[in-house]
Amino acid sequence: MMIRLILGAALLMTAPGALAAQEAPAPAPLELSGNIAPVHDPAIVREDGVYHLFTTGNLKDKEGLIGWRTSTDLRNWTLQQPVFAAIPDWAKEAVPDTRGLWAPDIVRAGDEYRLYYSVSTFGKNRSAIGLATTPTLDRAAPGFGWVDQGLVWRSGANDDYNAIDPNIFIDDDGRHWMSFGSFWTGLKLVELDPATGKPLPDAKLTAIARRRSPGAVEAPFIIKRDGWYYLFASYDFCCRGADSSYYTVVGRSKAVAGPYVDRDGKAMMDGGGLLVLHAQLDDSKRFAGPGHISILRDGGRDHIVYHAYDKRAEGRPTLRIQRIGWTPDGWPVAL
Image 1 (cartoon, rainbow, N blue to C red):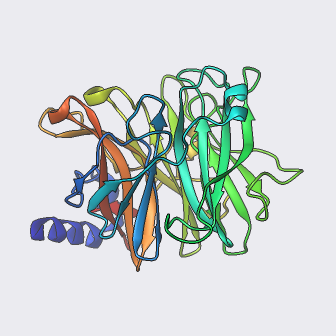
Image 2 (cartoon, rainbow, N blue to C red):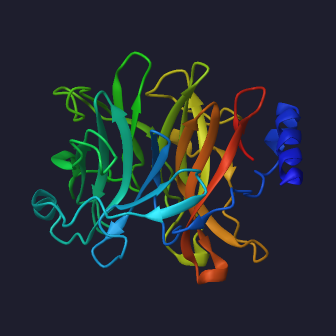
């Protein structure tokens, strides 16, 4: 661990030009235990000293529809009862062939927690994003209970985008934004009504990232730091076990709607992005395809939370968490 910390510090002190020429460092995550696999598409939040992790879930999975895990130290994880006992009726009507609820995001908004989730099938863009709310994540607390609020946004065969992989960002001015997208024409952004968590009546989509085929982009995550908006995204292909080529990049902008560019000035609308987590397809590396990240900003420390595929366990998707540092010129480095 000391070697890893020294290496991370050295990277942070490296001159910006030299760092740009280097490959992102190999993952050096926290040592995790408990129920950490299978995990896909983790979203994380902390309430009263307890970390809550929400993940993709299918009807056949023992984790259930939207898997839910908890930890008090960010390292040891316990599986809880799932968020949903069944796929909501509106979701089955919107996407009749769906067999699960995917790629959630969790955010505290006012006096409630808002859990956004995806409804879809592989390879198709007949998809939808839904919303469930609860005043607390403490199952023993008065008032606890998830209430499904129904449809937030949808896409269909006549659309050139895919309405899955939502991420919610609340700006300093109180405006709420949802980014989403997978394959097709890339990542989109839409403004939400803070009161409902659903799109404003006149809300319009803004394109914020895309890649030309056969490259793929999905799973946006936006944060703000020192006046910059940072857009993280997953490139290439997940869900292929040890052969997954997923990797994570980032761009930044002075406006939430972009344009987002990488350190070399290449726009994410043109496939740009600074490498944060490498695909690690080399046989010497245990975990492949790190992606679909969340950023946990907790007690002055930033962590990147993601899944990767364990080559020693037949490519099983596994939870990974590691620290993020920031270079002098304001770019994230996975330590």
